[in-house]
Image 1 (cartoon, rainbow over the protein chains, first blue to last red):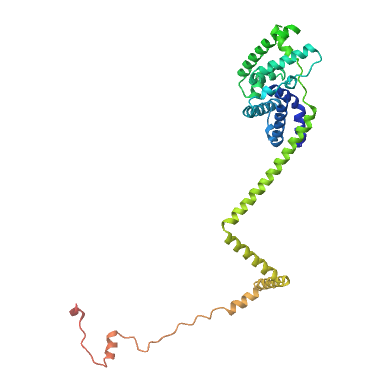
Image 2 (cartoon, chains in turn brown, purple):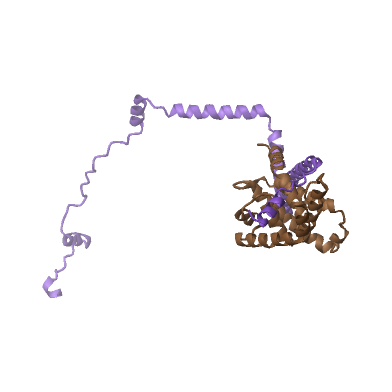
Amino acid sequence: MPANIELERLYDEHAQALFAFLLNFTRDEEDTRDVLQDVFIKLARQPELLRGVRDERAFLLRLAHNAAIDLMRRRATRDKHHEAFSVDAQALSPFAPATDPDEQAFRIELSQALGELPSEQRAVVHLKLWEGLTFEQIAEALGIPPNTAASRYRYGLDKLRERLRPIYEEIK
Amino acid sequence: MNDNDLFEQRLRRQPLRPVPSAWREEILTAAEAKRRNAASASISEDQAALLVGWRLLFARLPLAWASLAALWVVIIGVNLMMPSPMVRVTTQTSLSAQMESLAALDFQPGDLEVLGRQFSPAPEASPVNRTPAVPHRPRSERRRDADFGVTRPDFPLARIA
């Protein structure tokens, strides 16, 4: 299969998942785009990376996660006050806008609550809730032990529950 | 199903934002361009490395390489100056000469006999019948002849011992 067709296939199958994960992780659409592009550039230049990979999605999530961490480290040293300038809540939200106002309010609250989680817990929560990965798959994607993935998920979910309890009780 | 599970399920149901459609073309184009650049860069890197290698090779012994080049120029010049038909005739002559010599080696059985007769060694001369000019006599008698007939008493062997 030609390289560009293979790349198109990878994009069509995995870009949506990578985009949502990266947007939730970086909390910035431009950063998400940069990291997503970096991932596909890497795949274009080194197509052998995927040779022998059993779970493409988990592998690509790992690539994206590593690239996002690199970007955030560079960003942290370059601009320590980056998050102070990010004011557009919808631009940070990994969720689609809702027509129902209650639902939209819940999504905005959820997005903010996710943003308050440590990035490592946010990554695990995202992969568990919205990618439906098992803890073993999450562990493989993030390069951590499965028990760590499970504990990070529990801690993250507890924090979200506490943070969203008022609005959740209100719209339930 | 408890409240925690319901909360988890509600979170799961939240739809994620779709990836902007314009990104597909942009990202794939950028990736393809980078791939091509990387491929051409690797080729030019190889060429540059080759050039550097040649330069190093020639820079070490410039006089030797120049002499070698001059020698090649002379060889090529001489080769060009030689008329090519002559070369062909020479080649043919030498070939025909080789064929003749090979034919000459192709002996017939009769030839071998002739050659055998020509180069056969002369028959062994019969042993010379050398008759001694002086008849074989005891040494004492020969001595007596040399002394012009003067006889001397012989010493007995026992006395000498």
